Image 1 (tube, rainbow, N blue to C red):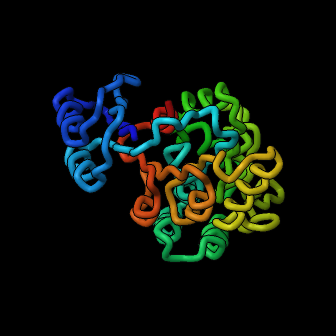
Image 2: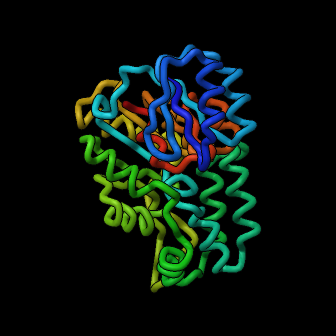
Image 3: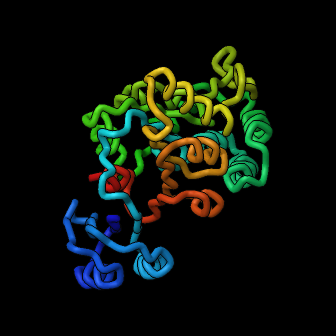
Length: 277
């Protein structure tokens, strides 16, 4: 078993202490912020406690695992691929951010049905000019660290990439073109005469729809259940993360972090690439 250790800064002393703790055969440098302890013996609780105290991510990965053995990567958008919840920022423009953000947080923690939460939040945006969408995309939306490196690395390894979101097509379609995703799935806001009506068109992309999206593309490509990777941060990502062979909790809510074997709390999104030889 290999132990992959990642973080903003990794002291040499920490790597040596982890190698001693796990009986690792050697330490391999992946990047300046990612190292692989080869031939480590699993002592999960001890390593988890050690790394948590030092703001390091640790993942136990079989030595034989290669990125090219996978064929599909599916990721959430808001607070995973990007740094914001788009609906909260639209609500800020509309002057109703506190009300919307409160519902968003409850939904991401798993305390409220996602479809109900989205319906309530979008209703609060009724009358917002369509131009607010461009304002949020251009002025507030930023990619999370490592996003471009991650997507480029996945595509170079031959994986199909899909962006699936409980957010909105205005943002997913632009990010799809910008980063080179193969497909994007999200909710479509209803807009009439240049203003949001407070409704979405069609079925809502919720947790079940995210899982179904992963399964649909997996089937289309002809992959095994063992050949998919997914990333997300909120409760509405859990079904998708559970369905994937590798589910990565990225800077995630506690309910998601507790369910996923792989989690990145300190590293960037490109840390997903470092999990594989």
